[in-house]
Length: 204
Image 1 (tube, helix red, strand yellow):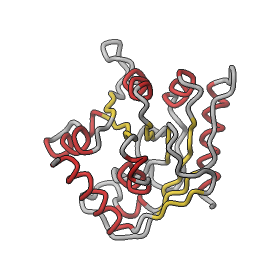
Image 2: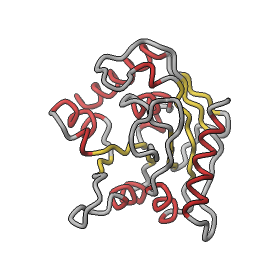
Image 3: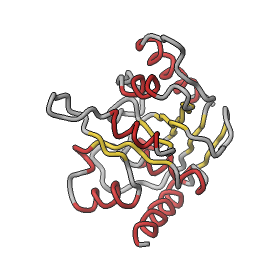
């Protein structure tokens, strides 16, 4: 009960601060399982994207978050684990660390949708960084699930790197056309194609 209240307050606060506008330019807000992948310039990005989703879809959608940031501190842990029920992964490359794709596949196999940030870390907002290979492995493992590019506009100005208090500015989230990985599509081609699908939304 308290977790739901925290989620609703966080989403309500994000909407109040940013007036987040959802623009479904390439698809409709359907109740189908999807992997939403977006540009990443702020720690508010997953909140803004979730805020742009209708409640019925948001209830089945889980953001993917990095443990090295979100597991630091009781407040962050509560928000990411309890309020938003995120899939928290370890980004470190080590033989001792479990495959970060596995918890995402488990979530998909439960029928949940995911929110991904394929750049892997926050950018400056000036350009989209090259995509990490995680989205390729996830799409290869579950090729029947739609991938939806989402361009989040202006979030890097709302909460720039090094700031703890968000600035009230208008933001929007543009949802593009569904895409899937092609049969035997090489990793480099898929990553370039999905990144370009995201970039194409920046002008819409």
